[in-house]
Length: 226
Image 1 (cartoon, rainbow, N blue to C red):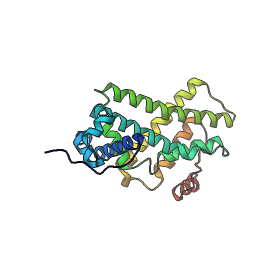
Image 2 (tube, rainbow, N blue to C red):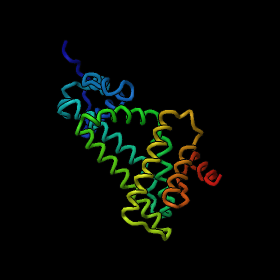
Image 3 (cartoon, helix red, strand yellow):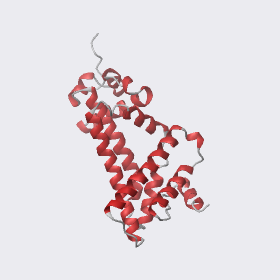
């Protein structure tokens, strides 16, 4: 049977590649990496399998691109509320921590996707390299925010101390993020973000509060001292 031909859509190459990545992510979140076959991705994206092969040399290349997209998207969602230079450095750091532990960054789909991808790291050098790059991207942003907050407070840290604090703070955020996405019903609204703010604050020796203008984060501001 010949492959059906979906309707033609006038899109840029970047738009077509992103549509394929989104289709792959949807399938991985529903069925795991094994369910994200080239045929299934083509059907989900409403394109031919040939179009996938035009943009990606293999399924593995598409899966790696999907992983990179997912991780970079979560980092950007975490960092976007921080782009407010007129507020204090400690508030920018607090906002970064809170954003990483609230929706849309912390949700079941995001954690499910991450868990599906992480199983590939042991046997796939490209995926491992991608993981390393995205890990450092997040951790380096966190380290820069910590450095700015400590400098602002008049307690600047050495390069080695900043590295250790960023590693520890990143581990706190990652651990809470995984639990919150895997078992959201086990925690009160905003609870993990509050724990994250207190824990990261304890690591660096500062009191952290976010500046995100949502009801959830207003709750964080009012309950931080409770």
